[in-house]
Length: 121
Image (cartoon, rainbow, N blue to C red; front, side, top):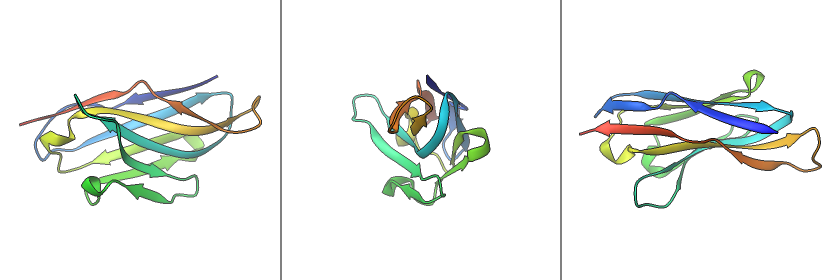
């Protein structure tokens, strides 16, 4: 019913920048919170950043000042702009969205397939 598709991952040098995008499509009535999570090899998935549909943001401490989350509600898209990248930022980055569809009484969480970000040391 709802698909999230990430793009923009890749290989970057230390100190470089990348912008991830995640577009939601399907039977969407409303999208509430959206976010980015990351999972490095051998580690638990962790929060990177979240944003509400009114634009309030929340960041993990390790990303404050380096990452910026934003969304375009007209395009059902969330972005993660990453600067000053470090090797420890290497991970698979997944977006999520809490979506109310046309056929469900309450919203539920959907996930994208993930985008690999590799910061070369």
